[in-house]
Length: 222
Image 1 (cartoon, rainbow, N blue to C red):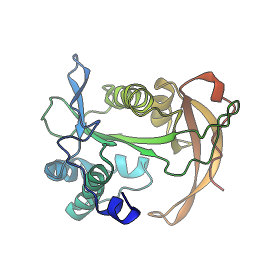
Image 2 (cartoon, rainbow, N blue to C red; image 1 turned 180 degrees about the vertical axis):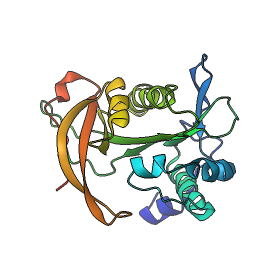
Image 3 (cartoon, rainbow, N blue to C red; image 1 turned 90 degrees about the vertical axis):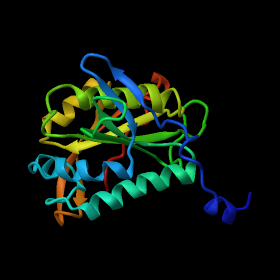
Image 4 (cartoon, rainbow, N blue to C red; image 1 turned 30 degrees about the horizontal axis):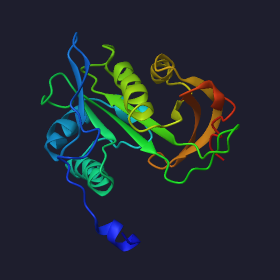
């Protein structure tokens, strides 16, 4: 298949991998399944409850508009149909229930790092997540991040390293990363946040599939 044909090729979401629903926990009931355009109304409602998610993330706006949700979920849907696998999941309390949170993965397309012993290109992913203020403190973010990292990215996708970032002062997000098995590799680095038009200090965490890559650490932001 030529490059142009690959660009035009579309995969069927019905047969794409990693769509879910995944049962993460029975008590409390916790599922992960691919986000869909039908999630737009609830996403808009949740992201406008207060400014917690806006304050804790680098990308979300407040107020959060239907156009914002449509653009974000459309990109997630397009990503799946273009590649044949899903990397954006809604947290739900039933397989088809409303969205109560979000977890996504970004698999770096151009490997920049190699295995220190074999020279093999490493497959690296980054994750992000947020939870509705109505469900904060009930373990949904920890369980979701841990499941996506260890059960999907490591086992299904064969990733070598999974990374995440947070504002230095965001202790709740840092605790989630640590509960996922991540270690802080860069305690403080400067990142430009476009929505704020200012620089913020962030920390970088990572978890490795095996200890042979521990020497390959996050470089942070330049």
